Length: 68
Image 1: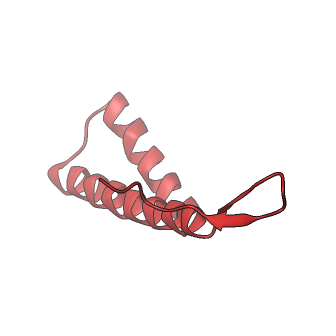
Image 2: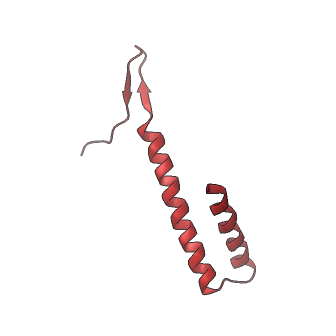
């Protein structure tokens, strides 16, 4: 689904650059950007959640949020 978001976002960006967007197209572009970023953030968080640090002694520990 990521490629369809990017393809349409790029089409709307090119149209905005060349001749301007209608209000509906601008709203569609904004919604597509929000959806794409939400999907990207979710995938990136999943990668970080499943990543661990491997120490020279062979021990692995998962990444954790920094405590305040």
